[in-house]
Image (cartoon, rainbow, N blue to C red; front, side, top):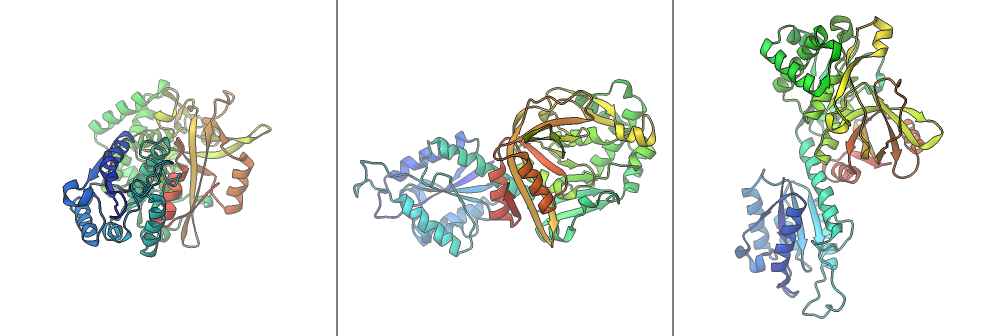
Length: 463
């Protein structure tokens, strides 16, 4: 991932600080795990941008590298010039982080005073007037060497990845929504107006691909699945049918250019092939292709946002059970779509007890069951309503709390970072969110919220 760096200057402030700023900010960007992209320092005075002409020169530099960089860091070693910045950044088309150097007590004389705090306020004012979105550092003035800016850069990377990952994004709806699940209804036009394309595929096309899958692809998929999970007594017909479905899904992803999918997971697959697709969702999520069950297209999009922000695979679970009398915690559950990075060890394949009860023994084999890791986590969900995209994020941790061994499928306990689980449950019920949440490792709520609000135009709340 590459970040372009813009250095601002205003002539009657100390320009000598820019040389050290170039070195310090470059190092900060690299230390945060990004590749810096800088215009040649010899092209402008002090290697910074001040005048309109220099701003246009920087804009040309960005244009020449269009597609290479995912965001721009505006570094203000001193006050900076708004005119040069406007012309430099007006067509950047990517998220912009604005950093200002702090002044130091004892160095407030005219020769050393930076006034970057004042300059940042002025810079933001002009960018806002021009309708150019920008991101602020949490600590208004933050030195590149500081832990505060390191955290800002971490989150800004998540913002950039989320914005890039949801521009010109395609989600596949595999099968029709089952009548019983009105909760996952979706407004495709609302998505299209935000440049998110929905491609729908009938299950008849899936079944035809399964029946005609090439033997080499089936064997390769079997190998991938048995590496992922222990199939035990299900290595015969069940593994064969699950592998065929996996080949079909891979084909559709390639055919329609799908970035994520949501699949109708019952009851045709159980009646026709006696399988459940859960382990395939685990595999796809692990490969970085967010995969939602129960045809939850809304949250296939949310999963994509959170996967991009975190840079790691994500999963979709139900918000499912209270955890005894503990009001800070809630049980999250699903049938086995967790990627390997969210599991303590290799899973094992079981049959779906709900399908067993309804259709008989062996009717729904394919759950990838195992223990979920304890980790800091971000939860989020999305809905379409009144022609708009709405979403929320919240943060907390997946705990080490035990769930009894007889608990069906994969379960974990979520403890909310601030407030209690009832706050989350009441919010979801009041605002009409479905019972699913996308789950990512680490704290990325601020990054997703910033990406949605500032750069993508989605409604979002931090709960």
